[in-house]
Length: 196
Image (cartoon, rainbow, N blue to C red):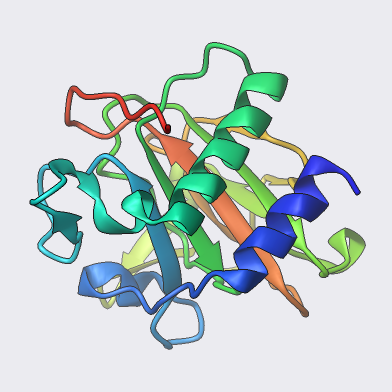
């Protein structure tokens, strides 16, 4: 079993709860997104629970033995494939299909992304990238101009990939079966989380 299959098994055992806040508007299905946040809390976001008795800057899920194990496992994968990549927060999205968007809350332009799961990569689940000039906003939703689509689809299953999520419009290629998408980034809090 490789490190990606091991991560999938860990995530299947951990309850990935529904996301709250404004992330629902990013859902391509209109349903609430299932997400798990780990690491250092963001400067804004009441939905990010911390445990003030332990450390007010660390997200509560991170302080559980399971959450800590998942964070360490992902950190090990990132260090293996992209040594030196800096991050202090992870978001893990379960079976979520995102509409076209940019990542506003990141401190840096670069994010690291990869997926794990039972979905077949040749049948979807990739990261769709769009040119700015091809994206329009209709009824407060970003979409592609008629007749246009993504200029590139990155296949990211078991492939940690750095991309410019703050500047490049992106979305999820439709997929079937189980898919966890891991995104690592540096948020605007100048702290680093090193798991025990």
